[in-house]
Amino acid sequence: MTEGVESPVSTVPASAPDRNLALELVRVTESAAMSAGRWIGRGDKISADQAAVDGMRLMLDTTSMAGVVVIGEGEVDVAVDPLEGTNLTAKGQPNAIATIACAERGTMFFPGAAVYMNKIACGPESADAIDIEAPPAENVKRVAKARGIRPTEVTVVVLERDRHTELIEALRAVEAQVLLVPDGDVAPAIAAARPESSVDLLMGIGGTPEGVLSAAALKCVGGALQGKLWPRDDEERRQLIDAGFDLDRVLTTDDLVGGDDVFFAATGVTTGALLRGVRYTPDGAITESIVMRSRSGTVRRVEAFHAFEKLEALSGGRYGR
Picture (tube, rainbow, N blue to C red):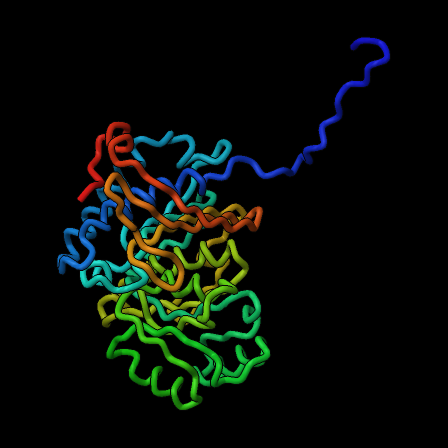
């Protein structure tokens, strides 16, 4: 060291956030969304779903595997839904998204044969108020109290299914505002935790994998999700019990995603309460995504402009109409 010259002192704390994998993962959801976007309104949910799967796989193949599946020295758990809302896409309806999440290895809940689970999800203000084992009206009243509003001002998103007839009646009996959606409950679960959204609660029976994805997102923004596995028939019930699942257990956000460093990314396919859908231009597309990490608590909105000619040259895929 030269005499009289002080050596620089680092001001970066030892606990500073390391590489944010969600910023790489958003490239994957963007690819899936743009691929699925070609099928919006065409009435073909199978082709839309396959396009999203192919688009997601294409971008994963061009991404450094160390950057996607490794954090430090350990592998990670990854949960994906290339197209959450296949029917929404096919019919041109709101709230279809492409999504992916990852966390430390062994921290994501594996549902086994459990295709469905009963869920309740909310934002951080109501996290300590909800109880999936309480009646729907009681949850509405608790959330209203936690948020400082009247029960009539509480907005609840419910999947429009025959199995939810009693739930919907109970919610309307307390005069909550019930928004019925035809498909997809990950976007509404996230919307319940976003201050710019009008959604307060998600309630009802939906997919178990989607519950894990929702929990990953809510882990990043401070919301809460509770769930109970919901076997569809006696055979599925037997399989779950034989596999050691406790069907009476209330699964919390931490039960579904237990890691402390969770990454989540989602890109809009059709415009909805959470994200704008894919918008095509003569030479490419514009996408809107949300990118989150639990460790830093940072939530980013990413608007990206994609030039198809250059993107296709790099990836070998097709994104144009």
